[in-house]
Image (cartoon, rainbow, N blue to C red; front, side, top):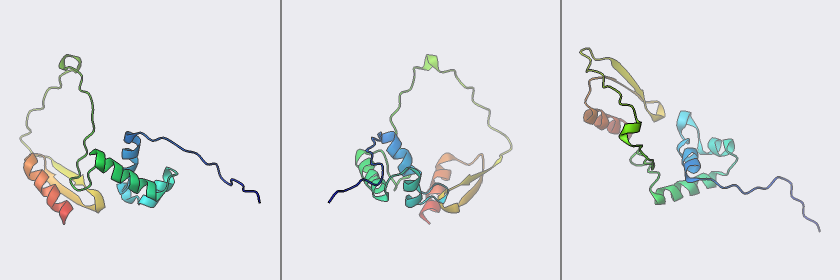
Length: 125
């Protein structure tokens, strides 16, 4: 008996940044794990394995929604200073779209801490 290879078999190397980009893309615009896997020509199991690996490395945390990536900040003399805009007397409305089709509307003068608590409460609901 003689075996045949029916498809092109290949082994690819993925950097942590590429893996993270793929793992994070699950859920964006309602994309499922299967759809993301098909888009990148990998298996669903590979995405789950990468999730586990990235969690162990501390690069991905689904519970907190926060993502920390290492990066270098150039010295201050290389970055031009951006003048801060004066606080607006008239608050402007802001709309924030969250995963799962949720939407928050609030004024631009809302305190950051209060907005953070509101977002966490909506995501937990």
